[in-house]
Amino acid sequence: MSVRYLPAVVAAALLGSIAVAAPAAAEVEHSAADAGLTSGRLGPTVTALLGLMAIVIGTRALTRVGRSGTGNSRNQAVLALVSGLVSLALGSWFAVTADGGPGTGNGIVGAWAAMVFGLIALVLGALTLNRSRQAGRIG
View 1: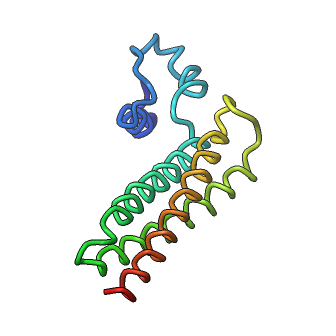
View 2: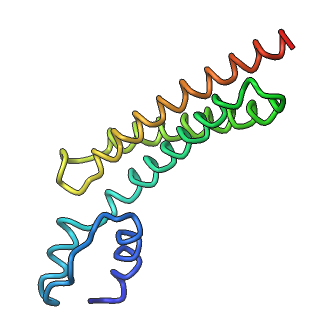
View 3: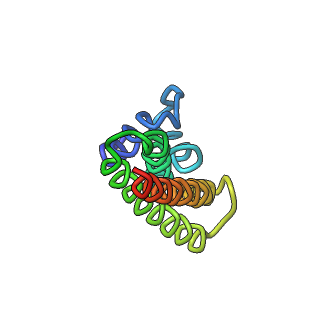
């Protein structure tokens, strides 16, 4: 295997996207384009992970909004909103610029996942901000 494929293989192994033994040297380049983490899949995958992280942050902020430290919940809600917006925008960009459908290596599935995750994070962040404002008026 060539050294130039090493970062892509390490990243794919960390993400759990490949779990196969290395085939013969002649077949490595062919299988890396079909099943591995291609350059078209890397951006949407990272964007989808950003959206997933925003969902986790938004969920944690929403569950903690009624407690005494509402300032931290507001900060987390804003972080979920911004991360969700970035995930939604970049996912939309990757979906528009993808050349093929699912399975072509262009990242269309990751782009759609990023858009869905970003939208969920936006809703969670908005709910948290709304509840923190209501808790501020009452308390």
